[in-house]
Amino acid sequence: MQDFLDYVILSNRVSDYLIVLAVILFVLLLKRIISRYLAGLLFRLFNRIWKNLDKESFKNLVAQPLGLFLLIFVSIISLHKLRFPVEWKYELYDYSIMRIVHCIGTIIMIVSFIWLLLRTVDFIATILERKADLTPDQTDNQLVVFFRDFFKVIIFIIGVLLILKFAFHFNIGNMLTGLSIVGAAVALALRESLENLIASFIIFFDKPFTQGDLVKVQNITGNVERIGLRSTRIRTDQKTYITVPNKQMVDSILDNLSLRTQLKGELRLQIALSASSSKIEELIAGIKKIMQHKEIENFSIFLNDIAANAILINADYFTKPLTHADFIIVKEEINLQVLKLMENLEIELAGASTGIRIEGNLNEKLNSSN
Image (cartoon, rainbow, N blue to C red; front, side, top):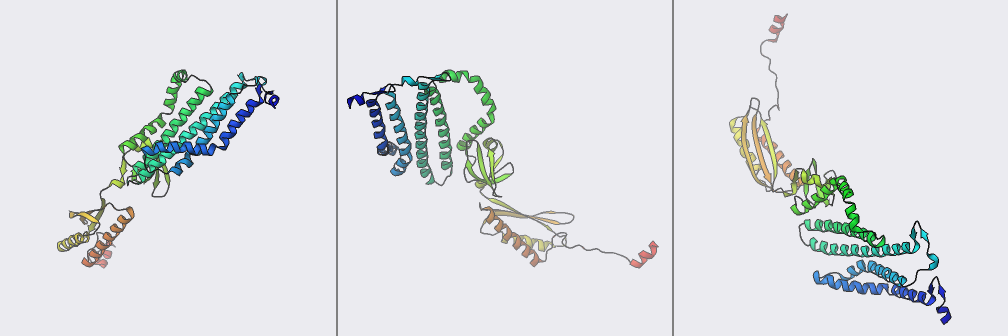
């Protein structure tokens, strides 16, 4: 038995292979238990910062990437204790097999670690979203989504740099210095994207609009559904989905219709000149009574002008900040009541009736023309 354990295969004894295999199998079998235990320790750390967290949700979200990272980490350390087989010392495209295997193992470990960090960011974002849901302001919700995506991008970039540093042994400092000119060229090429990124920060901190607001920008009117790192998504009244670059949302003249304190309605009447002054006074008084609507907060009605072909009456009224559908209903009610009032007063609009009058004797005119 001892001879079998001391038997050398690929530069390592059988006993060494068995020890490494036993360690990997041990971690593989207890991976779920160990990962959930470690997730519980992390949960205690987060629970000190944020109270009343869902422990099971945290474990289900973090345990899987944590278990995978633990398995890969232990496997790489265990395999590192073995001597690399002499028989495998070949080169492939000027790279030794040992270096290629080491590079692959390092990449796998870094990727699993980055995955663990991304899942942790998702959990923190979930916590903050639940807290943001307790407030009526939707800015907090969109801010959480924005920074979740932002930190994911940062972690991804860090992961790429770690792979270049530890897997391919690149000198990151020298590489960044050498790429300064290239970086400047790339920055110029990506100038618009960088401007949109900066504009997204301006939107979140200056808050000209938030998620759910009804806005009008560049002849586009709709509700803001999402504010991203590069663009803002708007659902128009035609139910189309418009993507507007954040730079245009910041640089253009934007009308946040959701912040209106009142809605304005207008009524322009052109009364026929045949209407008497007493009828005009009754009409104006009647319109003022009609404007005593529960949704109208203030109004202004006056005889604006007396033109050559009509008497002009202007009526401006301001309602509460209603929805578009409710405002249309109020406007329709006002217009119908004004029409009924004019019918009762027998007042006609200018140009409503046209008559042709011929003076003189028709026969005499015909004879004189002959």
